[in-house]
Amino acid sequence: MSELSKLTIAAARDALKKGDVTSVELTEACLAEIDAADALGAFVHKTPEVALEQARSADARKDGGDLNGIPLGIKDLFCTKGVASQAASRILDGFKPEYESTVTTQLFDQGAVMLGKLNMDEFAMGSSNETSVYGNAVNPWKAGDAALTPGGSSGGSASAVAADLCLGATGTDTGGSIRQPAAFTGITGIKPTYGRVSRWGIVAFASSLDQAGPMTKDVRDAAIMLRAMCGHDPKDSTSADLAVPDFEAALTGDIRGKTIGIPKEYRMEGMPAEIEKLWEDGTAMLRDAGAKIVDITLPHTKYALPAYYVIAPAEASSNLARYDGVRFGHRAGLAAGDGITEMYEKTRAEGFGSEVQRRVMIGTYVLSAGFYDAYYNRARKVRTLIKQDFEAVFADGVDAILTPATPSAAFALGQKFDDPVQMYLNDVFTVTVNLAGLPGIAVPAGVDAAGLPLGLQLIGRPWEEGDLLNTAYALEQAAGFVAKPARWW
Ligand code: GLN
Image 1 (cartoon, helix red, strand yellow):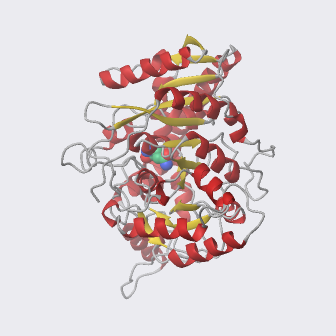
Image 2 (cartoon, protein in one colour):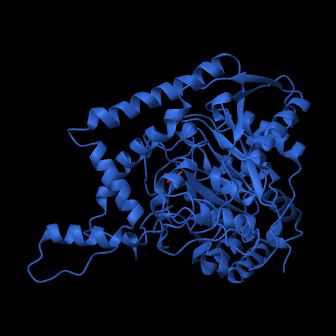
Image 3 (cartoon, helix red, strand yellow):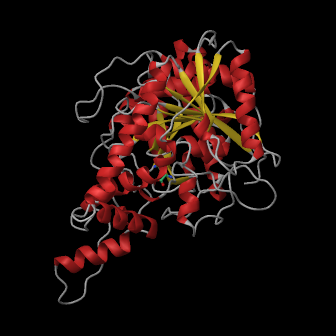
């Protein structure tokens, strides 16, 4: 096996600059790993021709930046020009966008190489990558014989980075879809502040919650890749017109004098002792690094999941109304006498999987005239209260909040698939961050008794990703997580 695909982005960047390696060599190494890893189900559309062409032009470029020549995987819901972009749904079967998303445009302008598109839950709805039309992705980590989920919805991205099929990957996070799969696979994932990264050209799930971010092998790589993804975009009305700092320059590892909050509401009943211990260990690490630890309260936390599972489906039901079989993707075969109504109905019944249909039905129900106030408006009020909880804590001088990233380690494929409530409970520590629009990062911090990775989450102040990344960097240094999955694929 080639060692090149195992490099971090930072190490590959330095080797490329010195001339020790070429982008074509890096890209070929990754493509070989991808071809040998079909059992992981991570890459669902491979683009070796695009990759090698981009690699050759990166090698020819003299003024390359940090990402010049770096091979990446792209989640399937980023529109990539002329390349299948299906959001893992049958309804977008055959769809090849005429345009490039802002995020991928920025990455490619900076010389990044696209190896292919990555598996995910259909329309990013899920926590296990099992709702994908391509079939599930598999976690490269194993405990015993059972195949484990890499988490979701960015399960393909997580699996690909953890298995060293690429140097980094894009993800998106509406309620935890970057942070939960990162935690399940022992990698780093950051969801930036809402508005930091343009949503233009990203297939929408819940527009007031969706944000894209990087999934990488370590915190430094997250800083490098995030900088390349951020920036103001007039094509996204919610994109913030703010300067993008050099996040990597913020990584001093010095967190002396910082105040870290520990929210008591995140101490959930029935939480495994190992998660509790990880959280305590992480707290001690930050204290030892010179941070001040304070107990805080976020009193509306318990309403976050119900509010999320009203707001996200409501927005999804509206966003997904555009898939009607008329303009793009799948159209159902029609019988004699069928009209436009039958075309919509049959197309949507065939094109959407059952989880997506469930969300569309919940969403239209909570938005219906009779229930709008009882559900949707109430959830919006709860959302404001959750946001105010965080604002109060930050106003008291807290710089970042430490919590577990997930309530468990990776679970077996199939284990929760038929139980949506159990599946939704996976997001208990992550959805608050999306509801409040804050930046959040998952960092691998330990392993459980079975040797599976466990992650901690740090939540930061809005627009202060640099500071958040630096705290995550200090935690990463102290935790010293170096375990890798044993290769079985
Ligand atoms: N698991 C959550 C859901 O199913 C979050 C998904 C996401 O962040 N895209 O909605």
